[in-house]
Image (tube, rainbow, N blue to C red; front, side, top):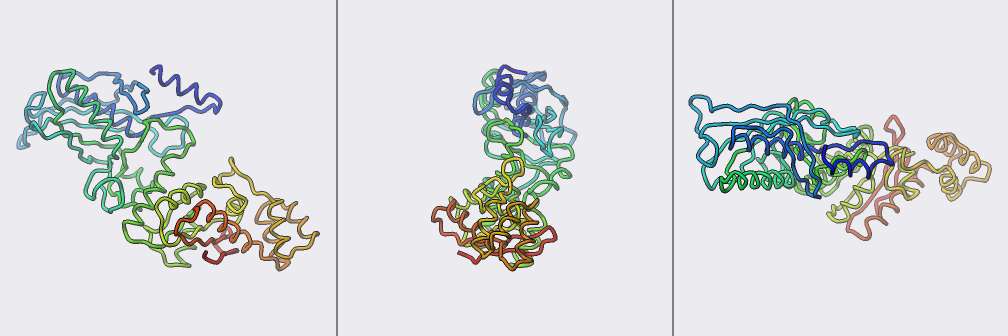
Length: 388
């Protein structure tokens, strides 16, 4: 590993977690190695790249293949390397200690020379998706290789071309991920209209454990896709049960559903900058009681249900001191809700209304109408706010 990787580890030492690499960094390393082999016949192994923030990690190659075009195929052209030659390099993604579905995936890049003036052309190979809907940072029909990884690959190939005296890099890069189509079923890609496989992602090249930056990026792309499709009403949902509830309540299509998870703040802050007419927030009563209390990250490791806060809301709803004391001492948020329901105190509605008001504060006057639905584990609505 490079000195830069040691610096990353030092920065994260307090977490005890090991950082890793994005698919974009792995594809850049593979592309750099493949293009070098295309020009020289030799694969650098390990191959060192420079990330956007200056780190210089080194990647071991898991695949090295140098072949000629098969009979009947068009030759590559004279932009460096023998005409008709293809070079493929592969890197196994190491996501560190992040719970990343692409950890261990083999990212391959095949380089084929093109005629002068062609530039760098990206193709989707097996396991890499194709964009089929507007609203993403790539045009419809483009391979799902995001803009930052594309630029990283262009920059590194230009350096390789200059180093070996071949002028500009005129080359076709086919990016593939082994089993990528299967892995992509566990991601947002099908909902975002990226079909056939994974996206090649990454803005820094580094995966910070449990930063969940990929999830937040997917939330943003979900808003973009919904807006591009003309959706005026979207829903941020904490899970599949809340999605089903929203569909039953409002009949929203799939591309209007945002898999918010615990990241309420990510939804609200992005919608603040990219407004839609109406936003529904739907989730479990306990999670949304955290939003009502002012928490924007609803994960159990980073925020807790405040039963004292629920007791105060219950008082506002007419609970006497005996009931408020029971609510404050309840084992769980749902237990507090059941106590209030039995006493005729609308705690669910109070939580929903207060969560809505917190959401409006984050939106800071953006032209978005917000309503909140609180559900139980079965998906039943146990609290709702009026839209405001």
